[in-house]
Length: 301
Image 1 (tube, helix red, strand yellow):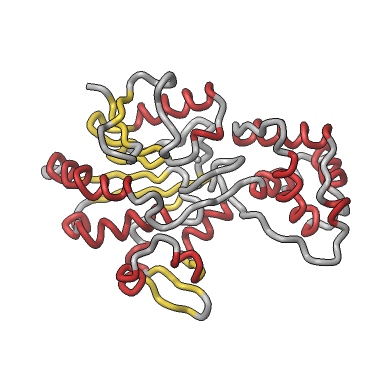
Image 2 (spheres, one colour):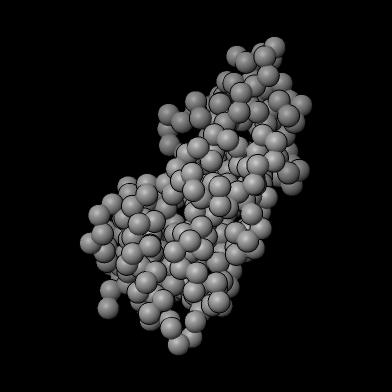
């Protein structure tokens, strides 16, 4: 489970949208206690994300768009349809709607600075004989995080372009993965964190949007992965980015995810978590590196 803060589901994965004027907002945007509990249990079952008490406002603001687009009059009617038929596609749309994708290029710049030096130089040195590098962005959201890493690699480590590099960007949301694959961003999105030199070098203007160049998109393999489930086969990873995702899981799910990450992380690989996340009291196999504000971890040796 995608980059980026998640409010309710990993996955990075539909942002909150404003309902069209003229709708009966008071009816659409009101959720009963029983309907809230049903949605909360659905989200927990499908994504292992915990919707705490007091998050009714979140459900009301996000589900309203699904109510409108699916032709219901109220959230209650939508929930009734969910209860009657769990295979009508509504479940996925609800999960998607209850996900925030707060992300930007080179977000919280420190992890990318640490990736640039010393992490990648160290890995290049240790993998010099095999010339193989595996990277996984485990919650890629709309794509800013994996593309930031790709730009960093192309700009500062051109030697890696001749290596056998396997770069995976995953998310629970197929809709977000479609956005990732497209590599299209709005003016507002490229204004957030993206250096002007990179915009000129790696993007092309197409009307009101900016499209990332094929040389960046072709570096990345996009794959749908639900972090709360058993992971599919993945190669041993040298670098894993799982930033601002664990904070939305319960303790047991956090432990299970870290256990799975431990099994696929190279003994000398690196795990990047969000600034508010930690492995303390969750998995004693990891130790935090002394890199300021980086959220960088390695397996204890």
